[in-house]
Image (cartoon, rainbow, N blue to C red; front, side):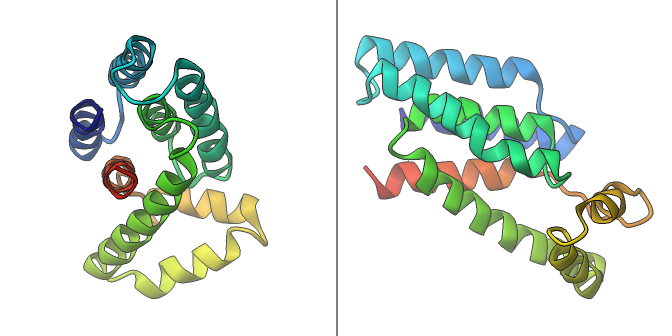
Length: 163
């Protein structure tokens, strides 16, 4: 399971950094491997836990996409990771992903000289999501960054901590 997780999420993260998208084929292949490993008993989780991890991963990441903070590929990649992590590890994985994403966001904002502006927009995200979403997505704001690496780091940490 850890090898499949690293391969699928690592591939997704690398492509996301280079192309700013996560192809569906990577998400589907990772999910299929996760379900097959669970069905064969090789992952240490049941098939129902694998499918529940898929559903939970999708449901947990979807609000971030709706608010404009993540892309659709991020949602699908995290859901695919849920098939490998299972329903018991997907919530801790999300916490690790959020921490990794926050650290990456701060590092990237510092590098771009935008830390104050980024923190201001972040605090406004929940109070005025429509205006903030437009600002986040605006090319002139230069706020976006690949979230695939945060997903990969967080999910692998969750797998290692609970192993």
